[in-house]
Image 1: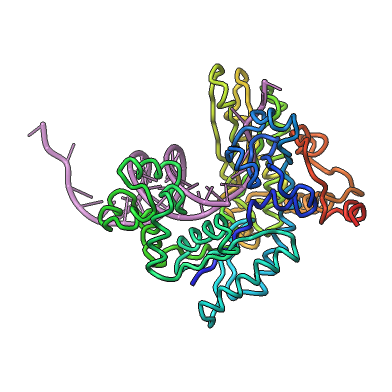
Image 2 (image 1 turned 180 degrees about the vertical axis):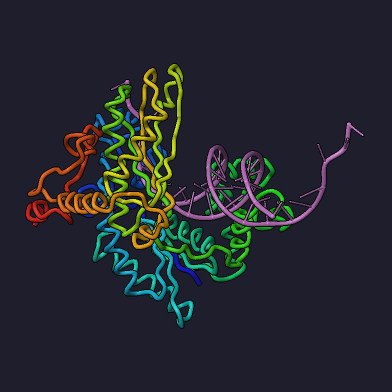
Length: 422
DNA sequence: TCTGGGGTCCTAGGACCC
DNA sequence: TCTGGGGTCCTAGGACCC
């Protein structure tokens, strides 16, 4: 049996962990730039606020205090997530962290009854030790465990844990779940299935295999097998990431090359830093720039370009250099840009990066670049060392100019804040 | 005025090989 | 006029996830 732990309304719950006065109130957490709603308390859901709603459309609620907004504070959420996961790691056999607020695990050698009791105890412990409410679903496959966790979250009677162990329970549950809520059925497939008369998860599970092969192909087949109790979703291999992306929307639209160059340099330096922190290097660097897709009155342009490097790199100089070379090839002066980003891919472990047959680079220069990047890494996040960056990058932090008007303190990771709280 | 960011996998089609 | 068959690899785009 697989268990899925899901933190309820995770980002909102993180904010509430240090603000018990927000319990029972409508709270939302916003995306970067205070753009869209990405997490909602039950009260906010009950008000009809949908996931992804643009924040400016919620003025009517925030102005009279009916809704309390927070800018996203990923440092806080990452830290609380790590605390939840560390409890799970101690209390389960095979923990697979699936996202910042979800994890699968198995428990060997327990009866179903003991398994359920153990999970109840976990829910209580995480709530008490970290302050985060979680739900746990238990079922023979991951897809079914996901559905079980929805039930555990939705119905108080489960007291946080829903066990879906019999065929009878499986069929009853699937019959109650709209097909659009099944893991693996997204915004394209959902409506397509509905138009063919498939309304519930059970309707899908009861289709013939040939029909699934024909209409849904491989990913859909996995979902179908799992709904029918057959394990088909494998554990994700958590080796090195295959690509790393840093991108941002701008508070205002930009047109000048020099402004885009500053932003793209920042994004590229951020990608390079992430590569170094993972001990990897990348052979390809892609830069993309986007116009504002909501402004139908303006010209639209979504170009991207990829530079293939002779060898895998992770220094700020090399990655920024490649990103700017790509930018130069796609930039047009007559357009207003709203967003840009840099992606590094074709990623190798750093040790393998140097194994190339014809390396025409200058080894002395390469060594200097590595030393300088290491210095920049030390300066990063250390206020005593100040801001250390390439001259093409922006003055100040790259997050500057991004709207973040409702941010909570770094309760758990900033010494100043910890002293203030305690 | 204001509309997020970061990933993975699959598939089809093109370019290339013999 | 007639113009093969069987592969691999890469890429772009689409679908999905959180």
